Amino acid sequence: MIELLISMLILFMIIGAIIALETTDLLSAVISVGAIGVAVSICFLLVGAPDIASTQLVVEVLTIIILIRATIRHDLITIDGDREFFGLTVTLALLFVFFLFGLKAFWNLPEFGKPAMTQFPDCASSRYLTKSFQETGSRNILVSIIFDYRGVDTFGELCILFAGIWGAFAIMRVQSRKKKAGEKTNEDKQ
Amino acid sequence: MKTNNDKHGMSLIVKNTAKMVMGLIFLFGIYLTLYGHITPASGFSGGVVFACVFILMTLAFGKDVVLNTLGKTTAYILNCSAALLFLLIANLSILFGGKFFENFLAKLFPSTNHDFFSAGCIPLYNLVVAINIGAGLFMVFIILAVRRVVEIGGKRRLISTEFFDTTERK
Image (cartoon, rainbow over all chains, first blue to last red; front, side, top):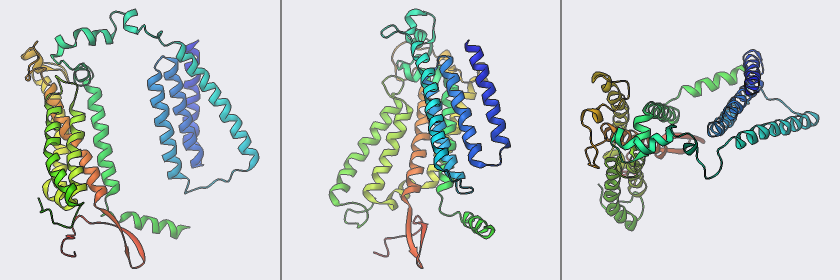
């Protein structure tokens, strides 16, 4: 059942990616990219990772807002009343579908007061609790996880932070005057 | 550090309080960083506290004092070298016959008591991450602090006041 759903979602994602590549409308391309992200989020819900699913959803919404803000200046689309009603219906239906998937993931969570490490004694969290001090020598379990057991994860996190800080720094520099020349050429074309 | 009757920054009370508190906050950041493997702290929180000291200095004394104390170039060098050192410590374990990102110092010097020198590479990682985070946050804050919007010939323009000495005009 879950395999069938995931393969259908993967098919949906491939179709969305082809639409995003082939369409000439920038706004449609951005929205198809957003649909792919929501499908990835539903996949995470189906395989039992609600935390990563919510992170994926938040990142996807932020990406769509930034991309729409970046592209809407180039081609504006006017929406009349009938189309707005259709869009509202589709939005509500999709939200209901997403709610159903979320409900399914919620039922799969372990029962309150009975964490997963009591059901599976050799899972990762019980190993952190019992053996982290002997294996790493660090009394702080959190630090022993983020710098020893999952060190490569922290390394990727630091890389993202480094690239983000230098990217923000490069955008916010005042000395760059090349952007104004680009804007002028755009005005000349219009 | 400039004198208290300088016209930049906030009032005399804020400047004197900031002078007394700044060193203690910096000491707290050092404590959070160095004791990250024993107490509930880590390099991330220590780095944020380091950045907070310089943000407080900017708000109380004005940007010129901070640019003379810890300049932008020093912040670049600290940020980049800390990121490189993190990768270097991670790669050193291959040299000692382990895998990438293995805690090789804990295997060479095993420790079971709660000493300051314990936990292998974890204190080194804490120190490097604290320098990286602190310098990065300071860079973002100082580039926002030196921007001003001024009117030049009827047009509003964004300029950087980093290289202008505003003390001579006032």
